[in-house]
Image (cartoon, rainbow over the protein chains, first blue to last red):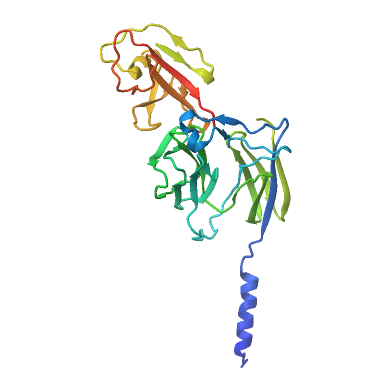
Length: 233
Length: 95
């Protein structure tokens, strides 16, 4: 009769777990979003006289921000694929979309699908928040100066528009993401998608002015220098 | 009545029309072009499309209506009088 020590059994158990558990390999994608020349300057918007005290004489358009080297800010980059096994979101606070100096900030906010987020108003004046999905208005509420934040959520994935009904330049987007592989390009056009499981995906790039495109990617090792250049603007 | 498609680039309309007493600006424009209703702000009776040219909130494209030069009217409530000038303009606000 074979006699096993307790230590041997535990060791055998670990080896078995290692051999028979599926190992999910994951890699990071780092990339840059550009636009072809000529590179547009940031558009200036003249503010209606009655709002100048609170909103200044001029606002910089947030619709297209391109650096002198053609690097595009505020492109949403995401993967389309089956991420059903992904762990659900960690409760790391509630994301906030603020209204400050008569602009929504951040201009693009990524939240997980069905995750609550707050809309607040730091301005000394009232705003009139409206949300749209294409031409359909989803909600609307007025927010007085320094009003209590209002909590909202989007139950379906998508890119939802926020506008102020009083200040026509004020707009922003809330991205309701069904998984974690979403990113926004920064001032240098850079983005990163972390811990992407090995596989083939459609990498989608959406920009409110430059449009939307998709590029097939195969993730079998880290992708350190993905690059995409929008040709028209 | 005037209809200006502005940035949509579609030929507009500028002519006299006969309407029944109590007609609204929305009903008046629907005699000339097909009109779609929806909620862009405050009521599902708002005009969101005229002659296949629809509002686009993401692009800041909207329909506005003036009666005798004033925007301070409700296009689905205001009762028109003889001689009123109704203007529908498709506009794009800067953003």
